[in-house]
Length: 179
Image 1: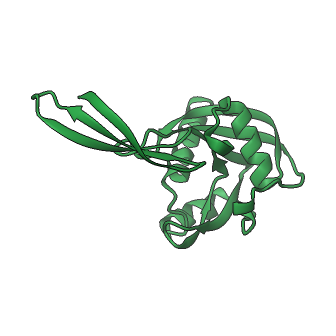
Image 2: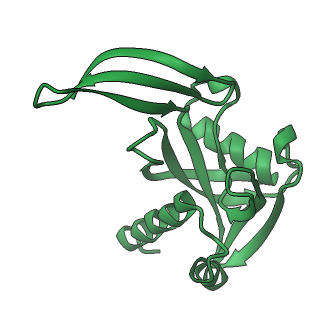
């Protein structure tokens, strides 16, 4: 598929939407709508068998959701992934990690968005004060055992696709690197 034109149709400090003219392999013309968002970091805070999650109201789905700490830099800035992971962990939970190990990359919705995420495992955790953004003031945090986390997925209490996929990356990492 070849891009023949592009125009921004909407933008705010967190994202932009563009409409691209395209030419398909068979020569036919069409359009493609793309949501551009900066890459994000998702952090799995792990302390022995416990996972630290955040819960907040997610406006697009109208529900409070438990998930791993995750986010982008403000104003669509491009920030080095490990730095962004440490920042998101500190900002949302107050935790500081002695070790951050990158586990893999996730594509949020590759059929409509350019956004990609890097998943990090955070260990050697030290508590501290959170530094939440204004939009995160209703956020709660809690520790859960792995068994509780998996039950919450099965009960549809955790439905965040990135968190569920990140947990899979953690399991694969542990399989490759047994303790």
